[in-house]
Amino acid sequence: MGYDVIIAGASFAGLAVASQLRGRVLVVEPYPIGEHQTSACATPLSVAEQLGLMDSVLGVQRRLVIHTRTSKIVVDLSGHPYCTFDYKKFCRGMAHGVSAEILHARVLGREGKRLVTTRGPFEGELFVDASGWRAVLAERKAAFLPCQRFLSFGIETVAPKAGDELGFWFDPEVLPRGFAWDFPIDLGNRIGLASYVENHRLKPPLDLFLNRWGLPRGETHGGYFPAMLPRPLSGDLFLVGDSAGQCLPLTGEGIRPAIYFGQACGAIIQRVLSGELTPEAGRQAYESFVGRHQRLYRALRFAQNLGVRLPATLTAFLLAVACAGPFLSYILPRYTAFAGVKNPHACDLGLFGINAPRDSTGP
Image (cartoon, rainbow, N blue to C red; front, side, top):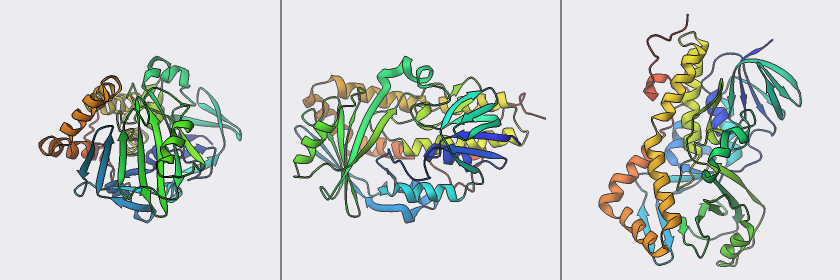
């Protein structure tokens, strides 16, 4: 028997797509759910609240401290708090409400309507690639080679302790053309670096950064995170999350967009399964929905490019201006309102402002 939908990948994006589907759905993931963490696992507290995953939260941060070479900027997040969370609990919580088969196997490729895996071939009608930056079904070469300058790379370790507040460092003495972070959790801190220029040799600068607090580097995790929002389709394939380059530029935030676009993609595919949309109309609806968010991505990309190219003192000045009262009161609510994650049991296209084209409904 074939499947209505086959999804490659069972992290934030893949599980968000599956949460909207009510058919014969197969999710293929090489690791147990919640294993093989690559994310820093920090997101607005509202995401955990909407998904009913507050039991995964390790800490809530209501202040953000931005460090530059010449200044320290404090941002009040009390109206828009962030949280750090346990990756395993969060993913398993998302998977708990999913009515799909989960197959632990590695994807080897796709041959038309057949997905080839290490556990054998599986037939499907619609396919979603939520496998991460490698885009195993679309192939990284096809998906990202034209846009390699948009590939950032980050690594992170868990340290016994450092700061008590959400911290970011935009300081070329820490890392040229990138940033560092310090995210408090219950028994320590997640400390990491991210390079905007596809620099994957980050362990030496991470060691230097940890030395500021006399902390050793433990095990690290991380990887590439593309941020460019290209076309979210590859032929008849839906792309979601990192495979679609949906991380936000400048901040590198990827969890919220992955879940948001994943929920929208799943809601559209469900209308295809219900016969309200043809598969082609569904792909057009998804592409149109993603395209409506280009303005924010371009603005953040512009800010990221300024930070890479401008002198450190000018970058610090611009950050201070952006975090000043009048500007911050405009920027912060709009940034945090983007990609509003929905309750997974109440999602439909109306919540995303998606309407089916009049002339393209299915039978």
